[in-house]
Length: 610
Image 1 (tube, rainbow, N blue to C red):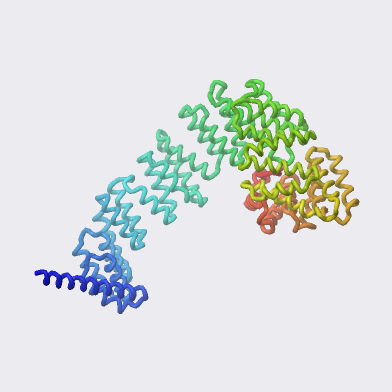
Image 2 (image 1 turned 120 degrees about the vertical axis):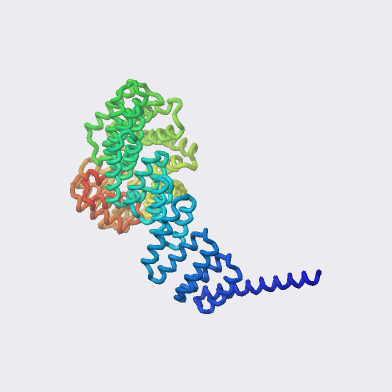
């Protein structure tokens, strides 16, 4: 008995081994495209193991490759007969019809197959997946559509919305999305996510807006469409329309201006200052008793500051009015945690736009003593205070402020900014070796602006020192820069005018032109400044200040000289010839804004760094 068992076991192993060998050989023939050789092997293998999906699939594809229609149909029909519940086999039969251009027969077959299998949810899912397996996306969509008709719009909304999205069918995607939201408001977040491709096409986006508005009008009690319309406006960057919508929602839901406040903040982030100002004024208009009254006042001041100072030539009257507004706010609420941000803006206005550095210093010193403020905000105040001290000639206290921030935030962006300011101060003082050692550290700073500025200043020192034993020319130039920083135009101009005569063969010519242009800007002589900037990028196009000069020239040409065509050419030049410049992103945005025919005010959104 034991012998017979051993013989049977040996026979079984030999059969399995032979089948495994044949399967590997068939797969090799199949992969190599040798379908005639693969067919016979797969035919035998399929008879031996009719449940192997892998063998069935390769056998069917082999028959299709050999154009053996009848054998392919027989193979699938047998599979269906033996496994009538396997919908993927039934889809395969229609797929075979299609491979032999029997499209009408396939259409009738698929229509019948779908009609008979849409009553059960799992059956619909399996059938649709079977179609997708054969790359028959349209039939999968038809399955879901028929399933929805039978079982309700929410039944397969995720699958059908995804299918419309994957096939870029934005119209049906929009129509179904609105139906789904109407049927079940809990689907709102999912639906808004899958609608993202609609905003990539202007026509599709407009259609969504129109249809959403229609639904909102037809179903005024269903606020979900008002929410969707708000989302549409935000995605389209139509902030004025979004503000109107959010005001309506705010009133309807008694949100006390909270949502308007949030939208206004978003508008500030996107430099839509007029809309932000309107939003903050709405919240302020609700009255002092409302909880968002003070935050709205602070937001309004910040928006007005950004709008006013964004211009290359800030309006003195607007600066004065804003100073008065901040003083009223502080007078009513005192110097404390709630007014600190507005006081910081007041200090900036006094220092940089109102020629009152002393007033700015007093404000910043009072902020730093205020309790409950975040350490990062205090650090920002110290950096600004250090600048103000430096403008007053108080070098020791400036170093102290920069040093405190550097020490406290050594590895953070604030600490890196403080280190750069200290390095720049050493540069002003003519201590080039120390300045360069600090700048070398900052070349790998996490903040691109600091890194770029460090590289630029380090190159300036490197290119213009070591040419003589005294470095006098570079020291005088650095002193001229320091005088400009302090708004001492007379002293700065005196040095710049004498430098070319005192050091005629020095390499500082492009830097002198550039700094003279900055002087002209400070004095409001923008046409003369533009000529000097033009000289820099035309005569010294390979030097480190060429892209700086080109960008500033482009901004002056756009905003003050009102020559958008010329400005567009300059922005394009930055993009094409200085693609590693720090200004290339803003230059590209401005270029396309002007190319699209936007107004000068709309196109100009980045301004000049003062």
